[in-house]
Length: 158
Image (cartoon, rainbow, N blue to C red; front, side, top):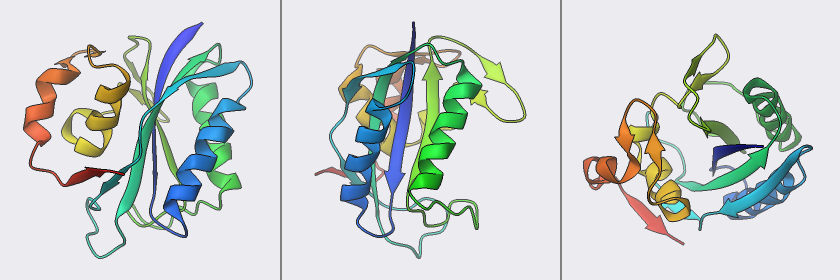
């Protein structure tokens, strides 16, 4: 069994309901158990600032799915929620990202672990810190060490 952390985000439709429903979808993944989930957070968009605010969260899964199989399962959930990849950092019905998978370091054309920007984003670090305050990010140190660097980013717990 492996331990995987997943980021959840949405800013189209009813993002609170979408993220809550996405937690339920994660709980139903084959070969996986939803071990924990963070609270929901309201955050400002990154990149394209002329879009609605996001609702973000994080989940922890016990899984026997391999990293890329987990990615495929997450992409299928996104598609079930009507995700259209029109533009990078654009609005979305649902976004699911594999952040960490055990302590694996992986760089393939489809998946990079740990997620290459997780340490730069309050909307990822804050929910993760709620789930696993002592978490270590392979190649980057502790999650707690990165939190001060993102303290100026707007994030509100719902």
